[in-house]
Length: 181
Picture 1 (cartoon, rainbow, N blue to C red):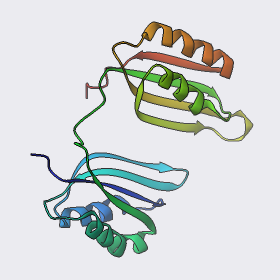
Picture 2: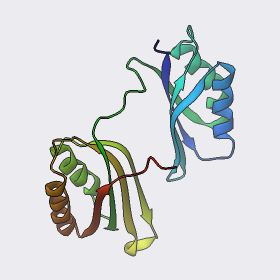
Picture 3: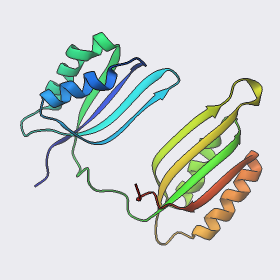
Picture 4: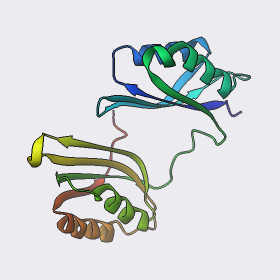
């Protein structure tokens, strides 16, 4: 039996209590957090949640409660949408990781993502950070991806090395054993 799930997103200025307030509403509605990503992005707190909800709990009612109970008080923009597909279905393929370090410039994420897409890779997690201030700051990009079995990982690694030279950054591409906690 597939249990109903919703996707919840919330964004607002970072402040203490956001996670407690949002999850409190979800618990009162019988929600159970499954997959989540929550982070501070440039002074804003962003949440993306996959939540198992009881039968009969509508995305619209849950969104109204979140907006009414915490949206205005916490200054959050909230959206809740039903998930139609099985949330347990993950990407197929071997887990790989990409890390990049170097001078910041426009187009880095696009260039790496496009190279990966050319090989059929599915990006399952991506984060970036600017390290330092001023003109000497550095850019860090971390990706987890799923690489199809028919993809030539050695050739992709060579092409990522060439891209790194073109962008003036360091790129490391390796099998990912992140399943170990």
